[in-house]
Image (cartoon, rainbow, N blue to C red):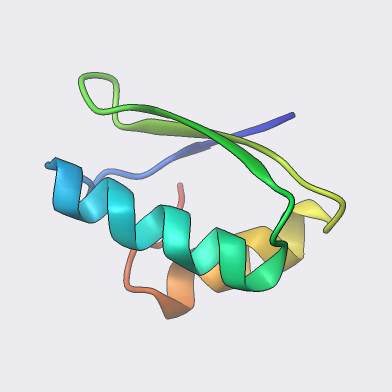
Length: 63
């Protein structure tokens, strides 16, 4: 499971858009969101770089 810090994630709407972007990349991915810490943990068959690219394209570039 990979963890990403998403500084621009501030609400449930942001979390939903992030989840949709990851699910488009890997429909079987498991996603855990911690809004307070602004982190997303993702269990995916895709590699970290591909997931980071999908997050960036959705407007939520990880740190």
